[in-house]
Image 1 (cartoon, rainbow, N blue to C red):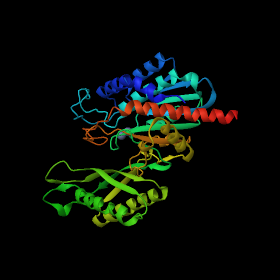
Image 2 (cartoon, protein in one colour):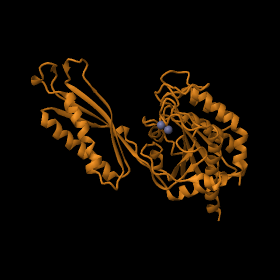
Image 3 (cartoon, rainbow, N blue to C red):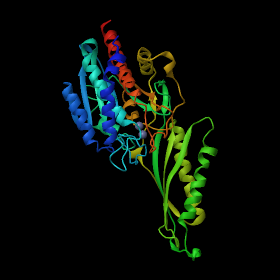
Image 4 (tube, rainbow, N blue to C red):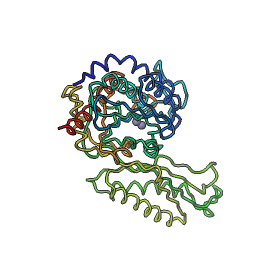
Length: 399
Ligand SMILES: [Zn+2]
Ligand SMILES: [Zn+2]
């Protein structure tokens, strides 16, 4: 067994420095040119076979172990968010309106650390480890883009793992569980079409603001009255835009929202009820509607494979103490790692990264921050998961 914990601790200062540099220079999805450049340079310097431009701005490195064995993919996401940072950290974003508010700066730095750990120890493990530095995780389809670009071929991974730092969980607590873990996410846009007119002559108009407001209220009954209380689902209208002037009745209202589910039949029910409710509400007022469910922005649920969850748990036990391994309820957030997990058995895990004194803001918040102590720990866990898997596969093949 390789002592990744000590090796990662020795790398800790580098991993933290990389993270702070990425944090200062956040880049949105599919625009991670600077980030990808630094990753590729690091992999090249380690002598790792590296491809760039995978799914536009992704980077893939392949590290061969000393003996033949299976191939495992580790995925690290790199993108930031359109958020203006308010942490006041000395290494805060230098780009107003852009922030690493989900911790992907940490993930990229962890991936660079994992690359170094695996290269340092390559004489001690079997198989082949493929590192994917993925672009555009934040709802932009980065994982699917890398799949289309062939990241799951030549060589095809036999298993895949990814880790997310989570600042709502005490630092160093590790979550691994089989089955449904993160929800499927849909996004949609509803246009309510009325008839605009003078704010003082309502009788000649069909008020899209009023019809839209009724639609928002009525849509909330889907979760409370149509979905079984034994199921889990969310329907959120996050944006409502209508009208330009205080004295003009709006012709059109545009509502945008998201649906989160685990079960495809619940998802189908919610989509059907949205159409039915919109039909009823708009007919009642003489308005019409367009319901645009954005198929290209659909993210499937993250379902962890039973055997792969066992591997991740076993590998984590070698790095952590037993009380650091914990369980939580499945999360309603989504994760496009599911695009990979739908094609390759694998497991998505979380490592707690709550800052000292508690998180000042959750993920995607302007005050979001992580506990940097989690960074080397995450690198040790991911390196150990990878080689635990490949070693086991190699032993099975030989014996
Ligand atoms: Zn996020
Ligand atoms: Zn994230």
